Image 1 (spheres, rainbow, N blue to C red):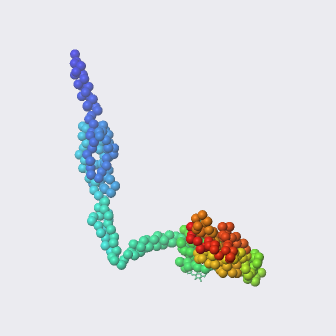
Image 2 (image 1 turned 30 degrees about the horizontal axis):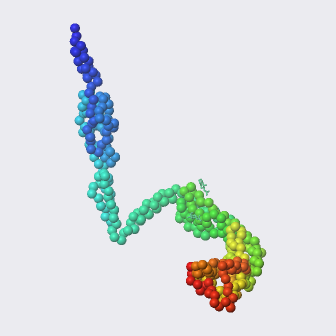
Length: 342
Ligand SMILES: *[C@@H]1O[C@H](CO)[C@@H](O)[C@H](O)[C@H]1NC(C)=O
Ligand SMILES: *[C@@H]1O[C@H](CO)[C@@H](O)[C@H](O)[C@H]1NC(C)=O
Ligand SMILES: *[C@@H]1O[C@H](CO)[C@@H](O)[C@H](O)[C@H]1NC(C)=O
C-alpha cells in the first residue's frame, strides 16, 4: 500500500523537476538596458542586454536564457563610452576639451580679431554646397521679353548662367512691367517666370472746373507721363498738383478746384493751427477749401468758454451756432475768447 503523503511528495518533486525554478530580476550592467525587464522569469525565457546610445559593448554575451536552475549565468558584458575622433586644431583659435569620450562637449574660440571666423566658415560651406549644385545646373541665356531690355546680367560661367544667377529686365519707355523685373536661374535649369512689358495709354486728363491742367503735347499719353493741375483765383486745389499715368492706364489722382469761403463774421478771435488769430485779419482774402478754425463759445451757467471747430468746404463756412457776435456798441459784454476756458 502506498501512503498518500508519499504520492503528494513525489508529485511535488516531479513538478519541480519539470517546471524548474524562476529566475530573479537580472543584475544591472552600467550603461546597459535589459529587455524585457521583469521581477521574475520562467525557465526558458530570454533576455537581451544592449548598451545605451553613446556606449559600445565590450566582451561577454548579450542574450541569456533563464535556466531550470533559476540562476542567471555570469554576465561579463561591459558598456564603454564611444570615443569621438580628434577634433583637429583651429588656426588662430583655441579648441577646449577634457576628453573625446561620450558624453562631452568641446568648444572653439577664435583669437581676438578673428570674430569673422564662424561666418567665414559657414560661407565656405555654403559656397561649397552651391558649387556642387552649380556643377549640375545651368540655365541658357535668358530670352529677353518683348518690349524689354536686359539691364543686368552677369553669367558666372562664360555665356551660361549657373544656379541662383540672376538677370534684371527693364521695359522700353511707355511700357509698364507686369511681374518681377528680376529672374533667377532655378535648380530645374530654367529661369523663374519672365516679366511682361505692356504698352499702357492714359486718356487725356480732363480740365477741372475753375482750374486748368497741363500735359505733354503728344497725340497719345503713356505710362509715367505726368500732368499738372492748377486753379483760378479764389479756388484751391483738392488733391495733388501733379499726377502720373499708372500701369492701370488711369491717372494716379483726379484733383478738383474748390471755392474759398468768405468769412461772414466781422470780428472774432479763433484758434487756427493751434494759435489764437483775429479771423477778420487772418482770412482777409477768404479761407481756403479745407481750412479749419475753432470758434470760442460761452457756457453761461458755468461762466467759462469752450471751442467748436468748423471747416471751409467748397465755399461754405458754417459758423457754430453757439458763437455769439456782439454789436460793437455792446461794449460792456465780454467776448467768449476773453472768458476763462471750462
Ligand atoms: C560668348 O558668346 C559670344 C557671342 O555670343 C562669343 O563671342 C564669346 O566667345 C562667348 N564666350 C564664351 C566664354 O563662350
Ligand atoms: C523679385 O524676385 C526677387 C528674387 O528673385 C525677390 O527677392 C524680390 O522680392 C521679388 N520682388 C518682388 C516685388 O516680388
Ligand atoms: C521650370 O521647370 C520646372 C520643372 O520642369 C517646371 O515645373 C517649372 O514650371 C518651370 N518654370 C518655369 C518658370 O517655366
